[in-house]
Structures are given as C-alpha cells and as structure tokens.
Length: 252
Image (tube, rainbow, N blue to C red; front, side):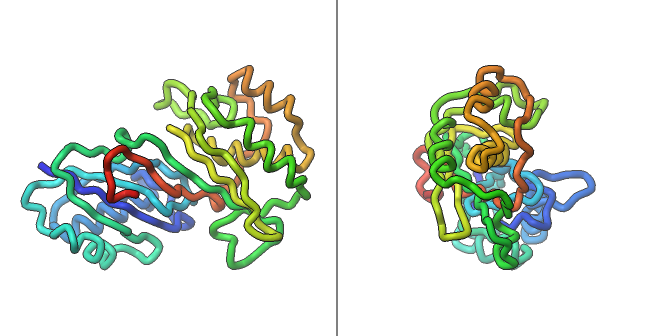
C-alpha cells in the first residue's frame, strides 16, 4: 500500500462543507467520485480540515490509501482529477508517499483567513462578509493580541461531541487592511475547534464597533462556558489557507 496526497483549492459556496453527508453535496464526495471514475474503484479520502458549509480552501490537504498498482502516474494526477471535477474544485498538486501519511492527524498547524468588507460588492460577496457597523481600526487591530497563545476556546466555539477539549495554541492572529473597504484576519493555530475562527472574528468586530467590551471577552475566557457573546460570522469570508506538516516538502 502507498498513500496519495492531494493539495486542493475550492469555492465552497455551493457545497455543504468538506465531509461527506447523506443528503448533501460535499467537496469530499466530489473528489471521491472523480477518483472512482478514473480508476474504477471506490477510495475514501481524508481531509486535513473539515471545513463547514460555504467555507472555502486555498490549501486543503487530503490523503488516501492506494494500491501499489494505482493506475495514474504521479505527474498525471492533477490533470486527470481536474478533468473530472467541477471548475470550483481544483487539484493543485498530487503526490505519492511510500510511508504512512495522514492529512489530518499528521498536521502540526493550520492557517485560515477571514475577509470582511464594509461596502457591499457584487464581485467579493462569495469570498467575504459584509459588516455594516462602523469600526475603530485601532481597536480591531489590537483586539487580535487577546487570542494569541494557549487558551481554552470553549466560549468561542460550537459544540462538537467528537471534541474532548477545546485548548488551542494560537501562533498568529492579526488583522491587515487590504484597502479602504476591506480587512483580512490571518490566524494560525496548532488546531481549531468548531466555529472558532468565525466566532473570534465576530467578537473582534463587535469590540471594534463598540458593541462589546474587552471585559466581556476576558470573562468569557475565564468562565470557559459556551455562552456566545456574538453571533458567528457568515462562512463566506472564511478560507483555509494552508496546512502545515513536518518534513513533507510538496505541501510548502
């Protein structure tokens, strides 16, 4: 047995997330169907991040166990799969590994971005979220520092019965002003819990708009209870940018 590794980008607008579901179309399903068409065999792939419905990816990673006689040569994987996939899902790179590689469990960190616009824009609406409230930029930029380091993010997540603890170590959390009408959050952590980035984005925007106070956020951290102080931001602005691994160069 060998392992197939894939780097994938997609527009998640018209999909119900990454992971297969019984009655909905997902990214995982589309890629698995494309593989099956090419090799006449069903293969299960595992994604590094289970992106939610409507969430996008620029650097999703997936892996699958394959037989040694896998019929597609490594240098043809990208071309072959893309010929069977819809245009809103693209394989960026494909590679064979002769050692065990698990896209999810071997990841050491993940990086997301979240884009916010304060002026409605037809051409940005699929990849950003429109925020109507006037914001203080200095408060927005400084708020990101609150979430750096190792914390319990229970208060800033949605309940997931599969998650045993909500402790994450955030390495990067910072805002960048893209232009007069848009801001982008960059956040990198050893792991993320369900809804975490959309929740943190909402909290930081609420602080910058004067709807929340730092004391409320600090109290949420201290209580470690799922008592949302701000609604989740829409999935449209969220992109899985990159998955980090040790000693796996093709994913750099």
